Length: 379
Image (cartoon, rainbow, N blue to C red; front, side):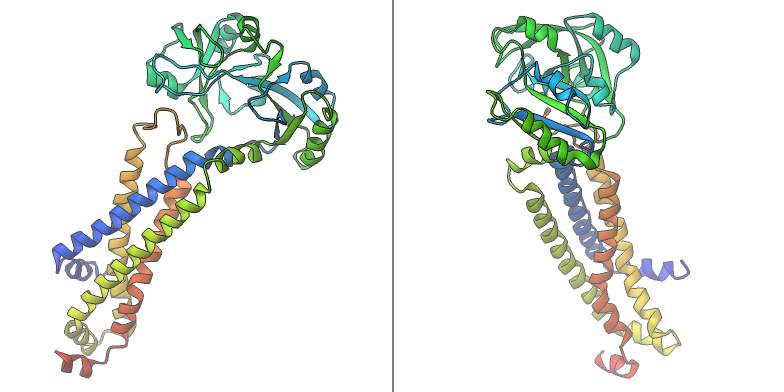
């Protein structure tokens, strides 16, 4: 930049003011980063839900089971391509605060239904051959220091007793937003050992052949089991995930509202700072015009100063937010999707630039319209 020395000199004219303004931007962008992280943590599961997957639960409640025999009946419904199932276990490891999702899965169909979860072939084979085998997400394995071959005791809260499993696999996600905190074990072993609800599963996941036909398949599934002792309620995986988020209130609206307040406050603070800066330099700006610099030059000079502060502050704030996620999920499994997405980072940068321009627009316009004679007369 040709006039960078002039811009830097103007910024450092009042060092304390510069530090405070940068601090305001940094704090605001750090808060924006945290809000973006929380949004991802709460609604990330909705965003990554499969477009071709449906979830069928008991019509009464998800805590009510469905018969295992429904699996074959679901496969025969027109438009259904694949079917798998799972059952919530609700076990704890050592301490009740050590929460993580753990459930029994159908070993033969689960991995094909969720290809975003990657298990090495040799580990998958070991899991298939061990009735007491388990596969755990990378994040949970690192959290508890589990390694392949470890024998892990899980205390049942819904299904009594201490259940011991052999860690046969550690899965990873193909995408950063994939949940790697889950713990899976074999449903056949689970059904054999549990003391009640034998022959029942928690819910079914169905893949449709054509995502555009999902509505018809949903109706066909629920019609198939209508008026039976175990009626179903089927929905798309995205809608199913969204229903869980809605139980905690309108989180997204709350986050957006807080974010809007933060940026509006930042806009006022930065605008006031730039207005004071321009008012203090009226004589200097008049001199620049007197020696031949154009009105447009003065306008862009003030805007550039504001943009420099905005860009540096945004970089510091978003950088701190990114560092905050480096240690993983601080909620110990309650919010497994705890990270700052590239989309949120880009949006934060754009908003920071927008605030920088808007905050300086009025002072910069005032400086541009400044008449040399009147400006020198004010001093």
